[in-house]
Length: 523
Image (cartoon, rainbow, N blue to C red; front, side, top):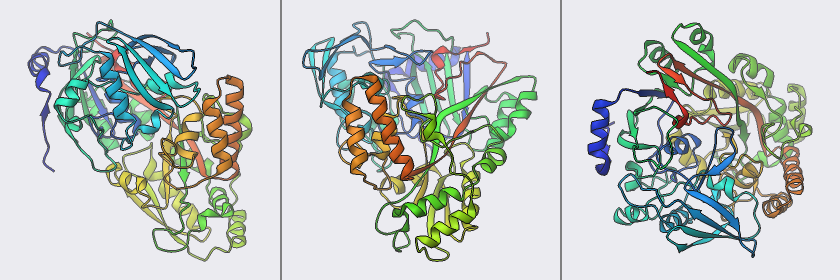
């Protein structure tokens, strides 16, 4: 594959000078590359997180994951209860020197909410926005909505003039194969500037000395290198070729912890790993789809030995999940976190009761560069399903191959991880995964299911301003998700980062997002 090297022209002189003089370099070895330099190109948490070092939103999460001002300094809800007015900073410039104004906010919101946008579901209540003056913008919603600020933490603001000049007013789409200027070029307001990018090889960021905020980091340069092989990533960390990874392999944590120059940072991710079913009439084989029968979905659930996966595949580092959201997420209740119990004989009985043919063949789609040990737990689950008389065809391929198949309904059973980002609320998966696919809802409803009663609860929760009432609606909706086995929750995956002694401070966040503007390298 020929690698393309794209240089942000407006930052070239500063970037090259920074490369020559950089003393504090963070060498980030990730398990995969970002998909694009356009944060609107796909609902991928890793890509969006990396680009949050370049682009910023009106608000952001602080060190305690509480919402605080960012490009906006304040906000209020106007008398009609559906219009939010934001006051903007007047001392911000984009990386190319253009001033930040309300027109940039309007253009960015229009872009991300466009019908062709893969991230339109991240602004579910958005209707329109208007610049009141250069530093005031009004955002109008489709009704009362309590979670706009949560949504806006991940809506990055682009430079309208830059987008217009480069024919980038419309979003790109990784899943749909739609590229554009913003795929390979970036121009934000954030703490770091994209100096260069070689897809699948290296992306280099240099410090933005003109950043509006007071830096808490001391990093001059970030080198993001995808290292897909876990063994190679460990070797690179031990040798000092990289000095940070946000994906330390769980099977190698004892070795890393024993190394004199490495510190391991561990936790449990908010991301719930789930198995999704197709509700379409036919399987990819052309056979009738039996997974529309809840007895069949329940049978596949009972056939999975969750404890064995936890102990053997995840090395005891995951948290077995019975609910589709993690305990810290609003909307979660312990009652919905109960497990079905591993019972292969009961699974066989349910399949027989449903009249399933012997050796039913179907595709089981997994990603080789996706979740923690995804390929391994997929192999284990496929083997467990085979033991109850099914014939799953394991389809393992990189994200770039699997994403278009999933978004276009060209697969059967699949694995999905959902961390409720950026919302940090159960409304996130309820709206984007479990709601019927329509408009901004059900963007990640890849199975094409539809439960009208569930939709009503989700819609009601989305307009309920009373917190207790909203959470009760969300919990009731999550109960339908569980009772219908729309998706099978497996676990909250382990979170393991590692740094060498070249790194003095690296805060570990429960949403598994590195925020390197809080990091310190050793001097």
